[in-house]
Amino acid sequence: MTELLSSALPTFSRPAAGPLGLAPLLRANLAGQDLGALCQSLLERAAADADDAFALIDAGLILQFHGNPELAMQLQREALRLRRHYVFPAKQPVRLRVLAFMAPGDLMANVPIECLLEDLDIELHLYYAMLDDVDFAEIPEHDVLFVALSDTEANRPILDAWLPLLAEWPRPVLNKPQHIGRVGRDVAARLLADLPGVAMPPTLRVGRALLEQIAAAQAPAGQLLGGIDFPLLVRPVDSHAGHDLHKVDNAAELAPALAAIAGDELFVAPFIDYRSADGQFRKYRVVLVDGQPFAVHMGISSHWMIHYLNAGMADDAAKRAEEAAFMAAFDTGFAVRHAAALAGIGERIGLDYLGIDCAETADGRLLVFEVDHAMVVHAMDPVDVYPYKPPTMHKLFAAFRAMLLKAAA
Image (tube, rainbow, N blue to C red):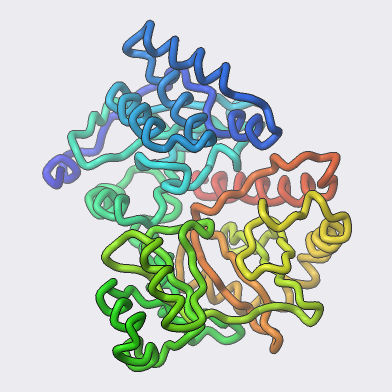
């Protein structure tokens, strides 16, 4: 692979047809449509034509929605064996051709860039990079390259292998791979620890054996974890969206949490109580596009672990009214209050496109939970329930488009 990537740069190919893709399938799924019949028809198509990579990759996406990750990844592997390049034509006359470098994996493995470029004048090409032989003829002609791979244990070898070639790429490159490792929870916590206006608790990568000692009360947590003590947040290294995330208040609660989490190493961080004066927790998702902040959503919940889908926003008009007010006043409110903190985060992480999940502390600092360019960002919530969202999201999408055009120019 190293010799392959140090060889002459490829001659790019012309685009071919593409699959349905993530954006329309995710929209249908979020709208509550039953995609079972479509999935079955795609599987039948693939059975009838062993070379139908498009049917395989679309069926794999649907199976991820339906909670069948093993079969989903099996279909994806078969699709990528057949082809690694997938094209999504522009919905308007083509202004720009964007190539997104992707990695095999689930929905968290890459930036969901299809959701950012819906209905625009951009021809989107996805190319799945791997660690085996590369067919450079399959890499399409393009005006700008966007590195979409997230920072995961599986993706890091791919990023490292492609780094020398991407450093000399003949087109502009956004989200340069040498910066992607900075979003790792432990790395980001170190990079942002001393930023003025930012509160990001330390995150340690800790071996299971050490945590088992703490659970058995063989030594105080603060002694073994360098001053970090209960309450603690414990999660798998590659966990996102709250999967297998546990809050443990003492050593007795740590043992059952460890039993429920896989992995020889886990991420451990102190829990910060960020509830507001009314007892509710408020979590914000903000995206930096070329350094400029944009609101994505605001979740309000009585529980500390907030995800937008479990915060009950759709069922509570008062919560939606507060989110609407947050979005309407974002540029003159939240973005101004935390301008220095957001700018500092953008500079230290160094990615052109970056998501931030955060809250506000009682003393006015930006409490950062996570920085990650692969966070889900879309405009697919029902307009009748969330009429205030489309203008905000399309403003973000316009900025993303402008960033691509600027890079290509």
